[in-house]
Length: 328
Picture 1 (cartoon, rainbow, N blue to C red):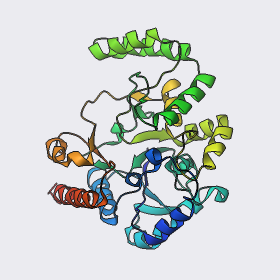
Picture 2 (picture 1 turned 90 degrees about the horizontal axis):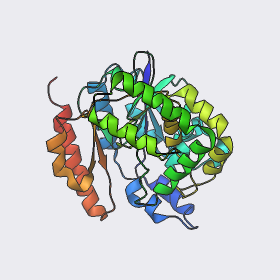
Picture 3 (picture 1 turned 30 degrees about the vertical axis):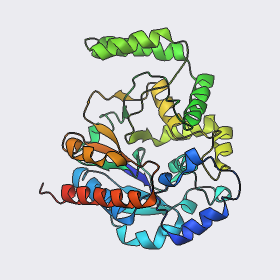
Picture 4 (picture 1 turned 90 degrees about the vertical axis):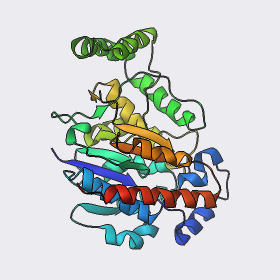
């Protein structure tokens, strides 16, 4: 079983990219969805991400780093037998470029040349900090491993509009009754004794339609063939999103494919509690608490003063350098 990692990356400090982005910002942009914190990173953090993947997931087949062409030269030294740099214009429709919308980029990843059937989509804030195995992402039958806890989608911020758009499409196509029946049969056979599973069955029984699933902010395992099926099913909605240069409330996202995999039971349930942990970067002191307990840490950026952001990024670099330089 070949498993690839796909990482989307951007750094708002690149002058050419920043100038290009500014030239498209002359119309209304939803600041909540397109704030500066959405584009922050650094080349050093990217180098450390790759180091962590090589150290703790040495079995990975290929690592694809997805970038705007403005970053091509600065990332050239990262390429190797294991790492491939892919620019947007190499796998995305040229008519939708340039784009500053992560949803557009991620909805096209199934078109990456030589991408394996089984791949894992990472955000650049999700760092591998301890050993992971193939079965953390796919089972022996190449089924994606995921959390299938039924839960209403998060509607606390503007991003909730995108999640709702995904769920509306799922409800227009898939049968919740069929999903629930198979959910019962699966749980009764394998997980009936767990209290949280009983809660999930009770919750699912109360619903007549899909309301969403728990999102742990961890890398997501995908089958390329399913990605293509979902595109064919919702091609109109995909292409509408492709027109948006920046994130908007009308977008759909790659989570539509995740919802399809869950809703059609093309997955294996993740039962491990210590797989991933979400930590806002302004709570960076918590990293030392969890870095030895979890396999994945999502260090999520938040809106803050640029100087504070630079300071916290430097602190994160120090933590990751110490972690990845440890002896195996």
